[in-house]
Length: 251
Image (cartoon, rainbow, N blue to C red; front, side, top):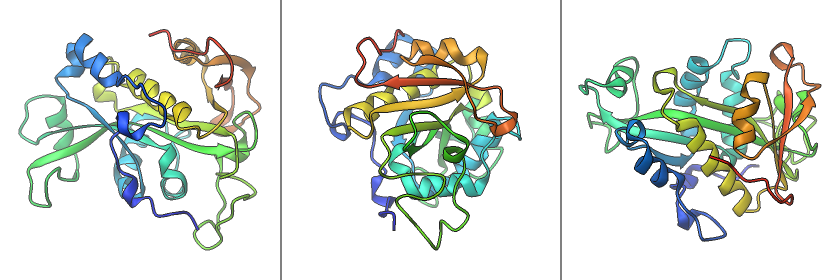
């Protein structure tokens, strides 16, 4: 069975990485970007306790035919939450800013206690699994229907614990917080953690044409049209190989 990930909710800081030195991209971004600094964001690993927030965010950020289902998100958070990261901010419901408006839209977990008025808001997330293929496939995008009762290291689809490829399935930021650089910072910190922790040999993803430059700036290489038909197809394969020189972010 997958190990208990409830103890995995640790900040993505220097201590949580395997190979120092580590420069926290949030620190650099806060120094350069006033729009981000006012949010005071922080990153944490995700697990099944974040399911409600991830489900809400996924469907706020993606078209219905592309958003992962709640059960698929639950499968990924339970099975391989150590590969998933979130970028959060905390604020009071009464704040007259975008965070306050979002907090008033639904019930968020409290920061300090069950009775606290200060809420923790998930601004963006990365959801990922491992695969034995060097690219994202329809099989890696799926999950076994019996995963709750029949966990396997080599299932017919979904997460493969022995895989060398980290498949980035979802990178999104809530629409209320676009144009603040949150997605770029989240991606930069996450790829650096995955690389430094030795969790795989590469990261693979599929994206639409207009997002290719964004991922190229992050160090990914465009491979070509993807065979994936998820959400109607028309995807581009992109890969970041960890053993290739020059695969560094340019932002």
